[in-house]
Length: 239
Ligand code: TMP
Image (cartoon, rainbow, N blue to C red; front, top):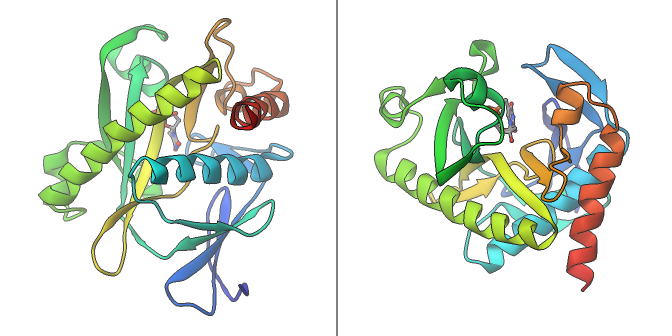
């Protein structure tokens, strides 16, 4: 599959056209940003890990009946995906209070919710990805009621699947962000990535952070954390 012109460059990935109008190539970079691009850095080897981790997780989700954009891994950093129109919503599922939830609502990080919770933000860098509710999403014309219901249903199912998988790796899935897209026929599929950039993953025993919070919060050991979480996944899949 040939890489044609670059269609888009995001903070962590580049997207290229291919000779098939329905397929794109995603190329993962080592660049890392936080706080809507205010903090910039590099996490050496991140692109390889995020590409491979996201692909493995998406394949597990596909097996469990969740449609995704994944087609085929092309190289360490490149993956062939279905072209979708991204629904401009960041879908955040949380099992444990952390990050912006803790800050916004004054709940200590680490409090386990009785039930998982979900929130949406408007995927719009210029506005700083503001939090919104589903009625706002409808008013802004970002998605239909049916699409929002479908997305919510997938998001909670994905949480159950990933939570159970990571538990087997000795990892607690604290929260994560998903993005969905529409195929040309309107079908909603999971898109973007699932990686330590987009999930909070804590060692179940020690609560050590094995995700991008190490970069966001200057905790050190960023590369080691990415390598460790990938190792847990690979070792799990090998057994
Ligand atoms: P938050 O607590 O900062 O809102 O983050 C919730 C989850 O979403 C966390 O796992 C990190 C992920 N996330 C992204 O993937 N992209 C983003 O731009 C932000 C702010 C969070």
